[in-house]
Length: 460
Image (cartoon, rainbow, N blue to C red; front, side, top):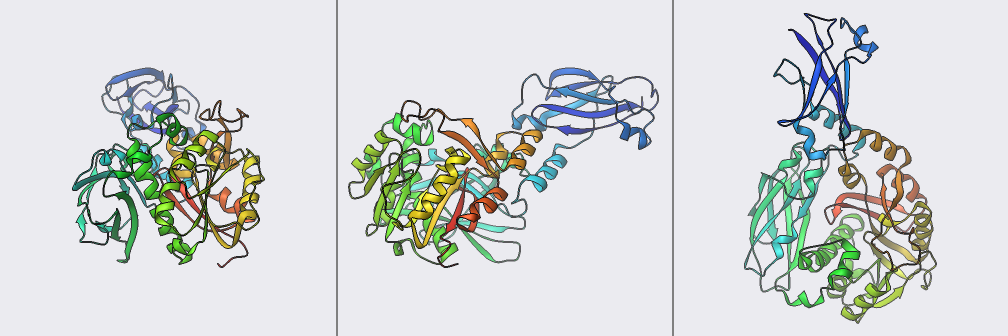
């Protein structure tokens, strides 16, 4: 038996390829589809592939297609093998090759992707020595990664550890199961907050910095955490509310400060009026109030119970209950800075366009809006289904999936969506309203992308 063949295609729905026995070319070869050591099924290689005949293969009808009974998890795909019967040797054909093809075709940050995520479980208890763990991906050629806390001495970062976070779904990133990191930092109890920064050298030898996490040095703010049902409507169920709400809110402000410095060369304290649009129960609002005590802070949301909770923990801010559609009861040019986390990720395209125009009305000349979206970092991680990816890429937005998180809270049950955008769509469509200064993939919460928008009549 002299077998020749290849696995051409593999995603969460199916595997296909071709195989022929050159010693007995008229005989149809049957192929076992294996998931690790488990047999999923057996399929004959007898479908027509005219290109194989043209390439010199003795018989063109030697293709096989096997559809899985139900979609696989993307993490299972590396363990799929197509093995001809009467052989123990799997057909060649690399998922790695297909990953590389998809990454180059569909993932716009292919060569420059920079990503970090920290695990909320690291902040379960107060400690003097914090073991910080999470996921990290650095651009090609990066070297000498270290952490520093509050600008102190560098701390070694262990990379290449098994991931237990979001990166396990990054099928489009090479070696995604091993993107875990770990570092131990000494908590500075003399400061109310501790900032952890990543420093490394890029391929040209230039130093790059990236904020990782901001956390309080003690747990005195634990009293701000809302009841579970309120927090769930904002970020979904969480077993570790301190990390999600307190550390998450503080880190949001660290990211805002970094993005403003990077894209506008301005400090957050220079913005007199700050809007937390989609403030929910105050996850970021409380931290904005502490970090920017001189700012006129406004929280806006459609969820009245959560908005009332935010009022109770941030009494110095002003809060506005929003309708599902504009306008807001705010004057033109009210806000110098708008922060919006996970709002446009829940809007239909129609609602999106209306709210973009409203935010433009509210944003003052020279103002900045930092808005989180679900772009390719999140969208591609949902599945390894090329047909679905191609549809998503063709339309640029998916807004048809209903999200029931606000069921019984808002009047229109179909309003709240689970929405995904492409980078190209945002650059083209949103550019009609704002100047898009930059996009930072996976920057907000480790799974949403930050879009930095400037008022069109403001400075570039």
